[in-house]
Amino acid sequence: MAEIFIKYNPYKLETIICIDGEHVANNSELNVGEKRLQEWVEELPILLQEECNEDYFDLTFQGTSMDFEDLQESAEQAKEKGMTINLTHIPVKEVAHMELAIEEVFDEIIHGPIEELKTKDLQDAFKKALNSEFEITVVATMSAGKSTLINALLQRKIMPSSQEACTATIARIKDTDDPEFFAVAYDEDGNKITSVSDVQLEDMAKLNANEMVSTIVIEGDIPFTSTEEMSLVLIDTPGPNNSRDENHLKTTYKNLNDSSKALVLYILNATQLGVNDDSTLLDAVANSMKVGGKQSKDRYLFVVNKIDNFRKGDDDVEQSLEKVRKYLADRDIHNPNLFPAAALPALDIRELMGNSDTIDEDLEDEILMTARKLNRNHELHLENYATLTSSTKKKIVDRLKQVSDGDKENLETALIHTGIPAIEETIKLYVEKYARTAKIKNVVDTFQKKLESSRAFEETKNVIAENTEKHEQIRQQIVQVEEKLNSGDEAKKFKGKILCCRYSCCYI
Image (cartoon, rainbow, N blue to C red; front, side, top):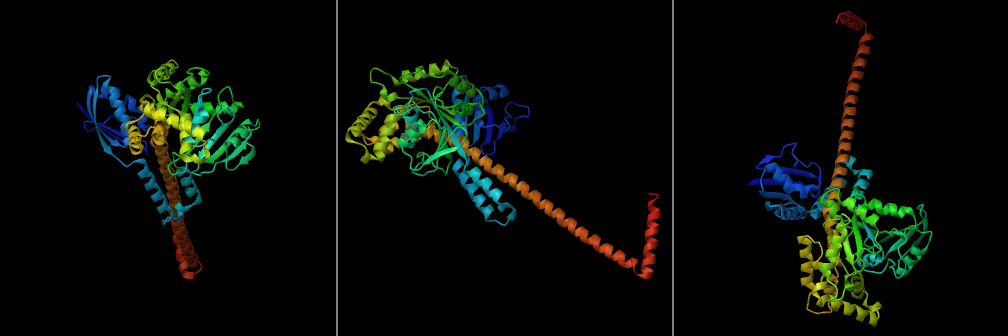
């Protein structure tokens, strides 16, 4: 049995691996360099097996709880290959604590004694790093309910659904925590066409129908997250058959590219699997998922929407999800992160919970009927089928316990059963695991560069100061020489010394 110790710092991308108390060799495959744990954690069991020629390991991991969860998943998969990895976790400071610490350091810099670190460019660089954006690209097959799902995440009807108009523009929805949405429309050359305050569904439908409009930038509140953590940007992309110009497709494929770290929600219609699909998009997804280890897999969430249309006895959720897995596997997408969802019921429930006065009685009856269907039919508790980590699953279970009261018309429990909260929690986990740790690294790197620049400036000042001092000494010596040259006997003696020195130097 080999004793393994791994220390991983996600904020600096530093990894230390020891086997039986000794650091792994520089030429070892276990010397992973400056890579994210998620890029090599799936290969770790095989690498350990090859390095140690053993199948049994005691592994101690020092790192964040999120990264430890990925290590646990890898250890579970290793069991299928006949390996045993006993895990011990040494916790470290989590993301939220590190962000707070960095902000405290930044505050000390701004109010500290080093004037060179109080420059505007340093403050701007820090603010930009601390307030960085994180993009989530939303793509879908036709009639998959993409706009409805986005509305469910926004908890209001803003994006036109297929009943009003198909998405023909790119919409960038940036989280600002402002309850009132503001939109600016641009043409394909980036020229502003118009702006709209307090944006409503009707406004977005008009902008979407305007042939001159290519991109709409929207700012407002994305309720399930906060700008204190990260400013999310939902990018609503038109389908390949409905793009207004080729730049739309370029944007979509750019965010699907393996070099991109943007999260992708790929929405499928559970009732029309494979219908109206775009094989080119799925090929791009498959190619992207093959590069970059676990992170490449983590950044794709396949949302299987419209599960609420299933009828008890006629349709089976698990069998349908198995069809989705096979459907994606046939396109070389394996072990996908699946999230069954009922986006329209989630949107309706949230609207009833937040704006009950604006909903008529007939619609309210329909929503309550759907809530009863979701609550009493355990097969439609969609959170149970989602690809969740243990910590995320615990959050969902705890949330259910807090709101459950046995009432079949309980809107809060029905909302959880729609699967939308599970998607939101997974997005938050991805942001915390990847985007926020990258933000911390960016902030630290920014500070180090500025600090090095400041040190160089200080060194330059010191050199100038030293040279100034030497210059003064030389000047004083020149004055003394001139005085001696201008004074009788002293001048003769001094000139004699100079002549002796000149003749002596000729022979050196």
